Image 1 (cartoon, one colour):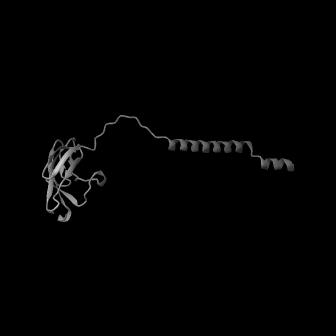
Image 2: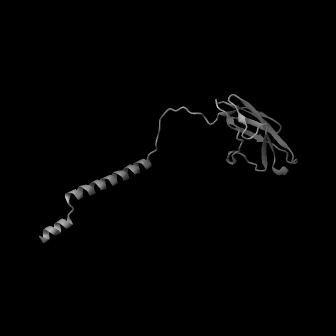
Image 3: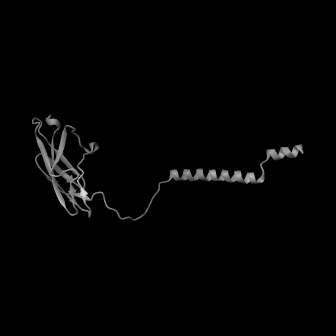
Amino acid sequence: MGILEKRQSVFVTHKKRIFLTCIALATLLLGVGYAQLTQQTLFINADADNTPLEDVVITSVTSGNNVSVPTYTSNSVNSTVTLSNSDPTDTASMTITVYNNSNVNQYFLGASHENGMGYTNQGIVYTISGIDEEELIEPGESKTFTVTFSYKDGQL
């Protein structure tokens, strides 16, 4: 009997062996599946109706004094501003017209510039007149406003 008891304690019963094999296989499959998912790029191919972010679009830009506007798109203006090197009160301006191209009310949220997008002189600032921040632009309505550039704090 001593040998038989030793064999039973050394060897796992048949049911336990099947259970451990299933656990090991499940763990292996989960690991392989996770590795496969983290190495693939997920591509989704579908059609969807959406409303573009550019519901309020720029329809025209008119250069004023000291401003050159070589290009503009529906949502950005590329301009070159030239201010006097000797007059700290010098200004430059341009007039921009926007249009609400959607069928819902939109609000003017202001304008911004990106430092990495060619805005090279932090000593020049701009103000917007002719439209207020959060001003309503109804569907099909156009709004015209002026952007004026000047030296920051009136200093060269």
